[in-house]
Length: 99
Length: 418
Ligand SMILES: Cc1cc2nc3c(=O)[nH]c(=O)nc-3n(C[C@H](O)[C@H](O)[C@H](O)COP(=O)(O)OP(=O)(O)OC[C@H]3O[C@@H](n4cnc5c(N)ncnc54)[C@H](O)[C@@H]3O)c2cc1C
Image (cartoon, rainbow over all chains, first blue to last red; front, side, top):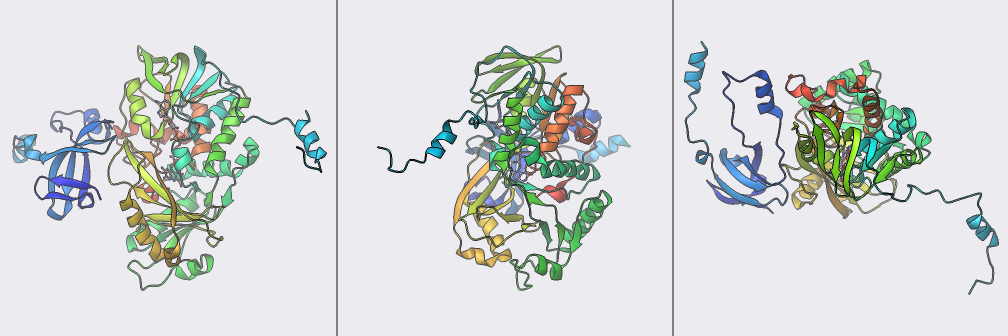
């Protein structure tokens, strides 16, 4: 059994988690070109090595970040998403701006 | 000491010039400094492409560079299922061409690939799966592919081994039945193409890894390898699970994630299962090989990894469902378990043809479903390299479709990896 350390729930069986893919920063939807948006949605680095990824602990619906080595399958570190995403995205304001 | 009775006929046969031993591949040579075409990767797709280039386009100054041993990647690891009952018209036309090529392949390469037509059953256990099956059957029939939705009474007649009881967690409601579904000897497919290509003049270099791609002003000039630099007019990569790493050497990224796909076989038993059985809802599939082993697989691992390790989780998940379909398997032991690195695309279709680098071609995104496409990939990529223009059958699978939002969604027909 492989164990992942959830920042909220502690060490749990990996089967309780869902992988969300590499963390990438969303370009500004207002100014981004179609090409850049397509790349953001679909194109991958698919790195062989340590990668920063989204993971979710399914029973508690808790999304967090894990640094994992995609060659050795070692989980290097897990932490709350707030460590990276520390600024509030004002979606309401953005949709106001669009009008 | 010789035995009293010397089988002299055997000796005469053995030493006769009339029956020389036919070498599979010529002994390795030194790498030349220049070729017309360099193919990165030595799997089935690369070898098929080399075969069609040398035999049908007269391009024989070709070398195939394989970092490990010949066809030791996913070509050696797949469960060898061949079928064309896909979901999109683009996919069905493409895979059906491959089935046709497979049916003639032992003749074409003069190499017995043990092609065995079994009939392919995709079981449906939910209303949603029944709807997808009906949809696939209609698309298939429109394009002349033998495929229909059948119900438990017919399944019982065609496949008596299957547990059709409704006293299970997911009773079988119906199946998409595809009579031409087949299995073949995967190594023989690669070896047949390799021998044919080598006899036409293609050089196959094993233990030769590509470590860099030389690009000048957007045009490919050659590759760096662990045995020195090789120049070429045209280069193709067909490196399956390593596609993103090789593309990165050429300077571009792909919509691919490398995710392991695992499989296992049971100890051999007497033949009892002619058919190929797949369950989309249970995410398992099984067929019986000509040696008697039950060959079993499922969906890809739950997360990306550049590794071919096996897990207990996979076996538990797979066999739990398998026992519901074929309860008598409870007596059998698993003999071997393994994995390959699948190059998964978001729409479950391949990425083929031109790339942002001029004269640099790609055959990738083959994920869990590329063995069946080996002949048609060889045929169409050889055409594309020889003419510089993508073959009609692969136009929908171009790399730009992701940023043009023109995906070819095959998930409904390809999510169980086979
Ligand atoms: C468990 C499993 C079951 C499957 N079952 C089926 C099935 O039933 N039906 C089906 O249609 N498909 C199936 N597939 C998918 C199928 O196996 C693959 O899509 C197909 O074999 C890909 O062939 P290929 O020649 O492109 O790749 P490969 O055979 O993987 O060849 C790629 C080669 O490139 C080499 N390479 C990589 N990097 C370099 C480098 N830098 N330099 C030189 N060489 C390099 C590798 O060593 C490798 O030999 C399955 C796959 C797996 C793993």
